[in-house]
Amino acid sequence: MCEIWGKGLFATQLIRKGETIFVERPLVAAQFLWNALYRYRACDHCLRALEKAEENAQRLTGKPGQVLPHPELCTVRKDLHQNCPHCQVMYCSAECRLAATEQYHQVLCPGPSQDDPLHPLNKLQEAWRSIHYPPETA
Image 1 (cartoon, rainbow, N blue to C red):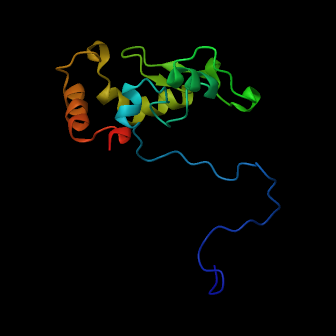
Image 2: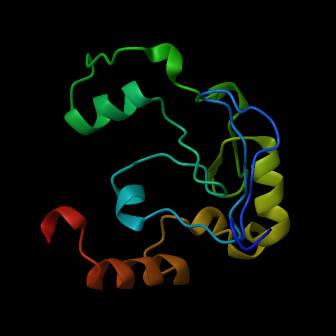
């Protein structure tokens, strides 16, 4: 921009507290395999959470009655969730499902073989887990 400020993005108008000013879709994204194994539900395309914070806390603590304050702040929209009709991979929206299908999922979809330990993608994931231990074991 100039020698004083350097390069960057600068606001030309007032930004309110909490206002979203920039949203970007990742070029490449993948959920941490250990999180997927422990059933953390995230959009397979953008990684947006598919479970509410309270559901996450209940799953992790093993306490179905666990209550978190301010549930109204949770932005998970389950009514928008969609899954791949072939392998049941979940997406946060039709937009993400369609983008995934167009960009990569039509090639990587395991179809009904998703639970087959001999499927090449499952073998790759198992090999990765065998050399990358869960963070809490380090």
